[in-house]
Length: 207
Image (cartoon, rainbow, N blue to C red; front, top):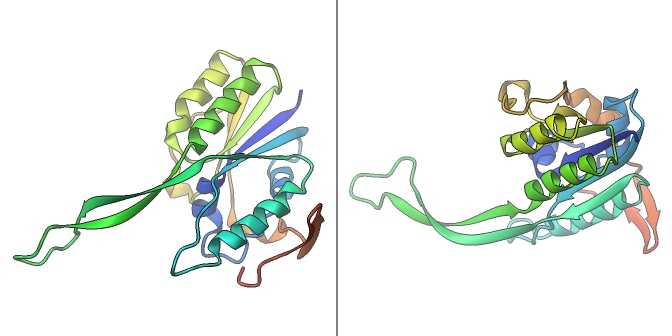
């Protein structure tokens, strides 16, 4: 049955690749580097499409280019959540005497990706699609589905932490654990150019 990998795209981005030059990440190469002895049969990537922002109008274009690029990889299956933006009132860290202690802000949250990851992890486990599942995330909300996949479905579940070791969530208890180290990222980048049914895909210049 082999190994299925579940990548929390939001967690991977903010934990390992944001503010680096290694966002053009080859997820298949990364998983094979981290799991060299595993027979990887599928990599499920969980993300949400972002919208252009006034301070970075090309952000959504870069993401769409990346999604096209990784979709050319044979093992990748992309699962989409969504972003919700709402106005909320938040307290100021250091309000000045006499001024308001709160301010209205626009808060954007990703919705659905953690639920989708947990759903497919349990679905694959109980339907016998893998004998090993590997979750690349540091999200403690996944602790219970990981426990159920191990104890009720009898699947080995590995955890790969994309954040710095000091931020590792101790609630995620897998059969085994690996740390994603930054030294792996430059060795697992996609080619500068790829092709899909729409044509050529070029790595964004600003990346």
